[in-house]
Amino acid sequence: MNIWFQCNDISVKELVFKHKNITERNLALYYTVTMDTNQKEIKSTNENSTMKKRNVNDDMCNDRIKTVAFLKVHKAGSTTVMNIFLRYGESHGLNIALPRIPKSKHARFWNYLGVDTVLQKERLIPIPPNESYSIICNHVVYNRDRFTEILGPGVVNIGIIRHPASLFLSGAYYWHLFDILRKRITGKNDNERLSKYLKHPYIYENLMHNRMFFDFGLPVKYFDNDTAIDEKLKSLDKEFSLIMLLEYFVESLVLMKRILCWDLKDILFIPINEYSKEKENKIKLSPDDMSNLQKYNHADFRLYQYFEKKFMRQLNKTSHNFYEEVEHLKSVQETVSVYCKNRTIDQFADVLTIKETVWNNSFNITIEECKFMVEQELHLLRRLGKKAENKYRQRKKYNKRI
Image 1 (cartoon, helix red, strand yellow):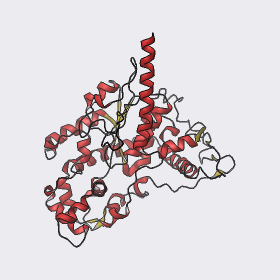
Image 2 (spheres, one colour):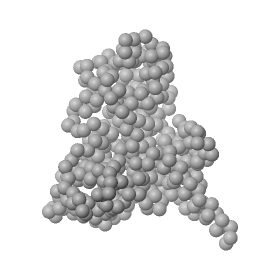
Image 3 (cartoon, helix red, strand yellow):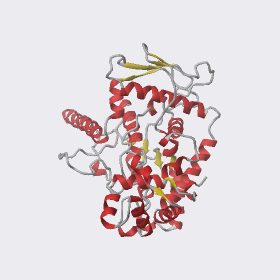
Image 4 (cartoon, helix red, strand yellow):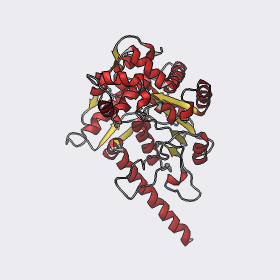
């Protein structure tokens, strides 16, 4: 269903989610689980199932995929996914392509591997000789050759997108577009000023002009060139194993888990950088607003339409038990979220044990892992970056001695 062609006055929240009975952004999880308050163990509804477990020891999944590039797309829930990849790399001793740490605490965009450009190798913290990078997950403009140069030809590319209307409004608030419009355009309220702006959007070039497709590597000069857009879509289709949809976040994670042959623990998350929705939901896009936004962000709508259809095809090809695993992940996710958010309360144990089920081997979640999942991006990158720098220096000193 091409949900951007709705013709009634409805909020963007309603526009994106009207066609699917899910919670907002699929990140607020409300699923009842049974917990043993002494052992802090989850009792899966699938305990009695004889279905084969999906883990790295299965015949279906012989080898974990450890060389992965995640394209961190602006305002599309990508910081939460980035944390998953950073945690995976750290817990498995992999070299992550991390940005160099600036001396100044006030440096801007240092966490990018390329500031609105393709990956710049000089921005990376070096790794010891005869070792290789395994993960890319920081902001950068996608370029296949650069990704392959850093990670090798066997890299698996994963991306994420979001409906262009909700992404535009999220970015508009984040980058203070409405503050600028209040100074430049007369109107009774933000809604009226936005409507006027969308009729002539080029009066102020903002950072949300086809932002998604720009992150995926489409040059600005081709934003309105359908031939170039078609060619780029075909290339991305071949080069990316999965482009996740934020509106189907948990389903996307399960697909990613299966593609990468990861374990359930590897894809657990606690939402990060969730911008308040209260302001966004006050903005209602009329049919004219939506039409004007489609013209302005033509490339982003094409990108979303193309990969929404592909994502649905991927879902349709999954096994009959796919949605059972989705529901199980939601249950475990809620349990982990409750534990991590209340980890300072005395009644909560130092370790949360998730029991073995048809979908996972037994595993523990520690307080340190909780802290990792909620750690803010810049602080986390500085911490991991210092560790990577120390590893490089120590190995360099050792090589000199021998």
